[in-house]
Length: 461
Image 1 (cartoon, rainbow, N blue to C red):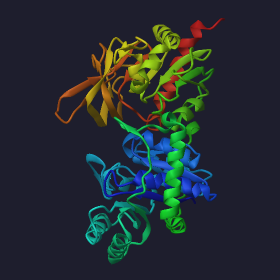
Image 2 (spheres, helix red, strand yellow):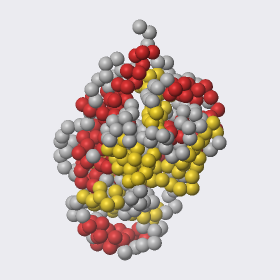
Image 3 (cartoon, rainbow, N blue to C red):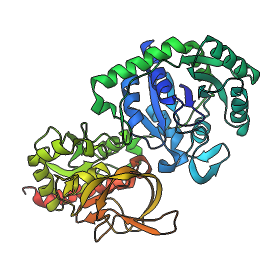
Image 4 (cartoon, rainbow, N blue to C red):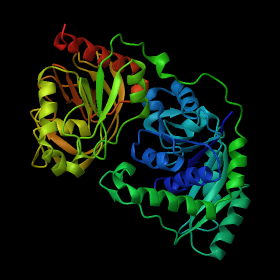
């Protein structure tokens, strides 16, 4: 059984990313093998978790993969580890609006903690409060009895006296204080329009930031008590998720190129695992550095990321843009999500891109964020028409037009208006919608099969 702990907070901005990442790194320093997880669809925090734990950061999102997959995915991601740290999302009970379960909102930190039967460590921003903290903690502890809040980390503590009063408040409601982080303790991690700069882009400064988080937690939090609480989790037996159980091998599976590097960091670890389970030869291509697609590329995956932050450099690599355009022109399967969509546009903020999609992309003042219940509007290399999926949008850009003659998706918004989005043409499927491959493994098998079948006529006999 792996010891496990969920790091949560009353709301966003309380410091749970710093505490969770610092815990992962501090525990690893002391010789533990740490499995890192993030609740929800976020791509950025898992990059820092990967640095902290030296293992792939993975997401646990019941909305995108179904609640029945959460425990198996957890077991898969924690194989070989002795402790798992799960960073929550937003406030403890904040989930998908309008969708509820007994422990809180659907897809919330509380929901995932319940599915994992894991104790919760609550990180509280203590600025502007003292004895009132007892009322806040009493409310969180009693709101959903099925959630076990096992301890508190006090963040933004102002002084010795402030800490003393806060500890008394925690004692009044019977919750132990596992640590107190002083207000002057800051970790410098740069941010941009969608949150933190991804660790893969931030390079050495990201490594230093994680080290600073580890120092902060090691000096402020009782690691032995954290481990004791994590080890108090119940026995958690059951099957682990396996990519080879989800997709069948594809005979003569081809080379599938997957974009990576600093501009394309928004991908789920299970995506590549599923591609490889089909037998595909996965080759990473960095559009900021590589001038050509890998030899024998029969399918191309362009995940999300921040191409808008690298538009000039991506545009300057004309040879790779030409390769991508030529590949798409032959009908070769191309799967692009969000950032990948921008890369395929005619231009991005005035910088010429690949020109595969007859649309122009620009930055927008409006953040588009949220889950979508989408339906495939046509057959494609990924989906059969009518397939329903849960996806997620997260961008501050837009394309004009928003969709092609054959859109990828349709969904009904909160305004009851039907929205159409994305581009499907020949072997291309490009959209802003992020999907989780672990929740849709048949799409991966369909894509690799389509790539294999398309490549056959072009191979020498």
